[in-house]
Image (cartoon, rainbow, N blue to C red; front, side):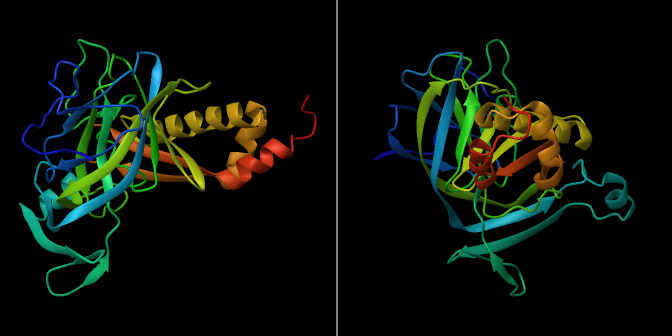
Amino acid sequence: MKRVGIEKLYHVISAANEPSAVVGQGEEFVVETEAGRGEQCIVLEGAKPGQVLAAEIIEVAPETEGYTAHGPGAKSFPDWIRYNGWGQLRRDVQIRGGRIKWPGGLVFPALPMVGMIGTAPEPPEAPSTGMQGIFGGNMDCPLVAAGARVFLPVAVDGAYLHIGDVHAVQGDGEICGAGGIECRAEVRLKLRSLERPAGFSWPRIEHDASISTVGVGGSMDTAYRIAVEALLRWIQAESGWSEQDVFLLLGSVLIARVCEVVNPFVTFAATFPKLLLEGMRRNPPPGAA
C-alpha cells in the first residue's frame, strides 16, 4: 500500500503545489499528517474539472501524544478571555486505546476526525489551508471521520486534494482554536472521481446512516442557512419530493451542528437520516405527481 510521509507539506490549497503523491481511482493509500500545521497534496489520476471527488475515509489513527491550546488572538470569546487575562493556554495529553488521558487522570473517548480536507480551486485562487469554503478546506467537521465519504468539487485536472489537521477529538465549534486535541496521525483512504450529481453545490458527507452538507459563512446564521439549503437540494434530488415538502419535513427532523467558530468564517453541518430518505422514495407526499 502506498504511504505518503510528512516530508512535504503545504500551507495553501493550490494546483501549483508539487503533489505529495499521485494515486489511481479507488487505490487505497495512507497519508501521514502533522499536528495542526501543513497539509498533504494528493493528485487523483483521471479527475476532471466539473466532476466531484469522492474521498472514502477508511481509518483515522492518531499517534499517542497530542495537545490542546488557546492563544490570545483566537477568534472565539475574545473579550471574555482577554479581560480575564488568560494569555496562552496549553494542555498536553496522552492518546491510547481509543481514549484521551487529560493531565491529572481524567479519561474520555477519542473520536478521531480530519479537520482539513479540500480540493484546489480554479487558478489563480489559492486559499490558505486554514480557510474553508465551497472547495472544503479547514472545515473542522467532526463528521469527517472513519466511515465517511466526503464529496468535493473538482476544479482542476487531478483534483489536488489537500488533507491534514487531524484531531483525536473535537468539541462542536473548536472554541479554543487548537483542536480539540491536535495530534500527528495516519489517515487511510481512497479516492474516486464521479459525475457531479444534480443539486450539488457545497461539500457533502455521507455515512451509512445519514447524509450531511457543510455550509460556510461570515456568521453562524449564514453558515447554517447555506448548509440547510444545500441539504434540502440534495434530499429533493434524491427523493423526488417538492422543495416545499422537503422544507416542511426538515422543520421536524433536521439535525444541525456548528463545526468551528474560530476561523474568519464559521462552518455548520446539516444532517438527515438515510432511513427517512428511503421512506420518502417509497411514499410521495399528497398531491405529488
